Length: 258
Image (cartoon, rainbow, N blue to C red):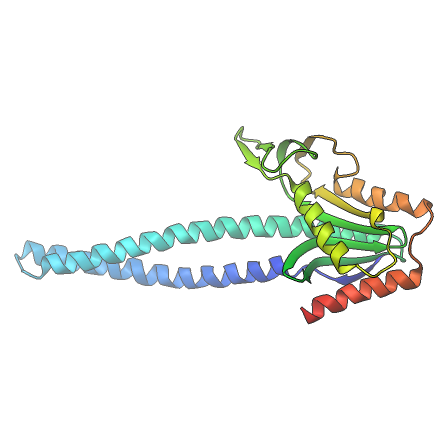
């Protein structure tokens, strides 16, 4: 088993924030709809009686109903966001589990790594530090048919969802390359061979159909990513165990201080 130094926390914090927001919206929902119904009912009664205050009371009731409708829309958005966050968190958790269980014990895994170098920062989903090099992993939970080319510009990939909808997405390899570049800037002064820092995109959803050109060694399933990393164990190491330990713990300390 690998040595896991950090676990996912960014999505967990987001999920907890959404849950708090939904609890507040639930309480507001009862108050707003109840007050709106009360004011509207009183307004119509006053209107039937010919009371001059009826219009004002109906206006208040309508305003409360409008406010409640706005919060209903926000509540639906938050519920959708909650489902998507839970789904991607589960996918990243599964990738983290595979890395932990199937990599050798001289490999370190840092999940949800917040890297700040100068004015640049990034969140690396998973970083593997090993004698064979370093592996920057960007995990996605896209489902459906994924069509693209790893060598072309951003926004030229497409996802055809199971319901037939097609949407354009940014080339995720670009994000992984940027994370690699920021990591390499942090690594300046070390003896690591830069050619052995690999950016990988992992499509973790089992329903993903990958039809990406030039995907080899770049766009992989979770199992393929683990096998890709393990295959380097048979090559000559570029880092000693002491250097691996120093790099991994140095990154872990960087996160703690950030």
